[in-house]
Every structure is written in C-alpha cells, then in structure tokens.
Image (tube, rainbow, N blue to C red):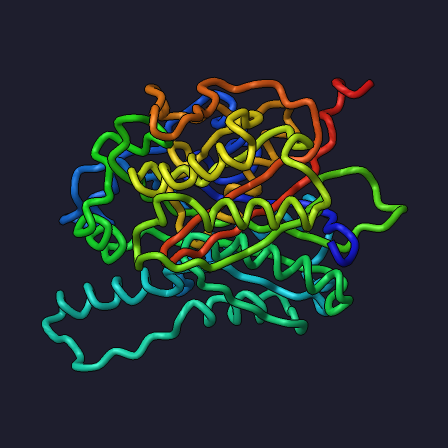
Length: 392
C-alpha cells in the first residue's frame, strides 16, 4: 500500500433484509432468506422466481427511487459518524451503480404506454446523473465520481476513494452503492437462463443461477492516522479486468486469482494471515466454479472461513460492493461470520466448501471478492478488530 489505510467511520444500508444496518445484521445473524416473489406492482410479467426486493421504502414524491434509497443509507452513515451534511463540502463522493436511472425510465415508459403514446426517441441520463444529484443534495463540492464496471462497480468506487484519500485529494470520502431491480434486468437474465427458480445457491453442486436483489449502502471513509481510534480499516485492494467472454467467466479462474493475490500484496499480507473470505458467490455454474478454483489455489485448498451473501441480499449488481462490505463489517463487528445460506451440497469440481452456519469471528483481516461480466474483478482487504468483550 502506498499510503495510509482508510478508516471506515460509519456505514448505512437499505436492503431486502431491513431498512437499516441493525435490522439487516440481525436478519443475517438469524439466517433469514431475503428472497420472495417480486411485487406485482413492479412487473406483472416477471417470472415467478425469488428476488431480494426492498419492500415499502419511504416515498418522496418526485424523487427517483434510487435517490430515495441512497439518501436513506447516507443519512444513517452520517448520523452514525456524527457528521452534518455541511461537513461534506470538501469531501469526495464515489458512486457505484449499473442501473442508474433505468428504473425511472421504465416507469415513465409504462406511463406513456397507458396514456396511449410512445416517443420515437427517449434520451435518459446514465448512472452519473444519480451521483450528481446526490452531491447537490449534500452540498458536496469535491470530486464526484461514478463507476459502472458491472458487479464490481461500488467495490471499485471504494478502492478509488481510498486512493484519493491516500493522495490527499479529499479529506473525507462518501462511497455509495445503489441499484434497483428493473424489468430489463429481470428479462435480460431470464434470456441468459441465469435465474435460479429456487433462489441463489452459492458454490452448491446443484446451483442454477442468480437471485436478483436491490438496495443501497453508504460508507464514510477518512485516511487513518496513528491517533485514529480503533475500528475497521480498508488496508488494501485491487481491481482488474481480464476479458474472456462478455458474460461467462474464464473457467480456470486466473483473473480471480490474480486480483486476490494483488489485493493481498497491496495490504502486505499472505493468505495465511486472513481470518475470513467473503466470496462473490453468484450461484451461477461457471462463475462459482471459476471463483472456487481460484480461491482453492490462493489458499492451497484450505481457505479460512469462506462465505457468500447473495441468498441474503440478492445479487445487487453494481451496488453489491458497498452492500456486501457494509453487511460483512456489521456481522464481524457483531462477532460472527455469517453462514453461506443456500449452500447444501459440496461441489467436487470446486474442491472447497463455504461455511454452512455462522461462525465466531476472532478479529483480524478479511478478504472481500467480486467478479463480474466482462472479466471485471475486485478484491478488498479490511481489518476488523475483535468484537468488544472478546478481546484479551
């Protein structure tokens, strides 16, 4: 690592498991499945598959749904850190998203169909517009960055925030991940035959596909100093792109292996130093096989506590980096590594099995992984102290 670690001040989350961090973490501890059929009002033509939908979010007339969820997570993070919006003036905001404003575009299109007319050309802003609106709402005048790198988007946003802090470009960084379930997303993955009708089963022998999800998460980060209080720290990471196929993963997992090793090198750690690994674990046959093989090689067939969160939170696409980071840190601070819900039968082709039940967390560094379409990959190393009450 070329600079100080990133001290994680506070986090916020809105997920299918709950509207805030305490309720989300409680559901993870209880092993609660976040999947259920999509609300009929969202898409009457959706296939009858489980998705991890955020139910009954607060309504703000005229505000896009993505903005509402993102601001809900941001407010929780700001409140937890005791920071006012005015304190963000010089901060940088780093947003990871894939769907951006697609949910609002689809809603307007459906309204136009009901009214009996459809424009020939519809020009809609990309995901960058969402970051600009958040920055304006919060009074942020520092850098405003949007990352759209498939499933790694908000993980890469967090890594870029760390680099900006290390270089002294910003005194404080707000990282936001937000993505919504859209009809385009559902039917696109249905056409690819990548949806599991029984819900996501990460690394399971009988896995058949993903479980779509949605939500938002916010992470406040500053550069750590020798006087910084104890708490979670982002101590290293890496992002890579090793194209093999537009959607399929390289079956040998070489790209996944390379980014994990690069993240560990950036953190100055060896695989044996880790206490846990949060896998990407989409539940698709190819992706899980490639990730599993790569993980087995990195850890020489004996990975530390290895788990996945997609059956809980769903696959939240570009938001998964932020959501899964917040959820993982929350669980570790509460003293446990969540079990990999949905996993039942070991896959002999992978050679490793995730934990099936929650296990105690002793404190220490953990590795978090994401591997997306087009060969995009990201790994982060976060050091989380032992929970209060378990320290010597």
